[in-house]
Amino acid sequence: MPDAIVITLLGKPGCHLCDDARAVIERVAADLGVAWEERDITQSEADHERYWEQIPVTLVNGVQHDFWRVDENRLRAAVTELSARP
Image (tube, rainbow, N blue to C red; front, side):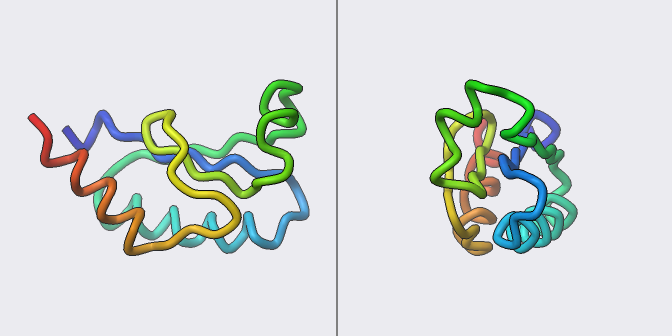
């Protein structure tokens, strides 16, 4: 179900790669009709400790999908595959 899919962007303020990732994620989410959210790793000690060397990090339904850069085609394929599952 597409409404059950959530793309999450983990980043921090002032991160230019995060800005690039956000644009890709916004486009894919809008095109495929899925939700997306953004988490600032500086607001969570656990997120900061786990992800600070990898941001931006993309999660799909809580599972790490990409880091540093978001490949739009790969993200579309992952979301489309999840959408097709019963």
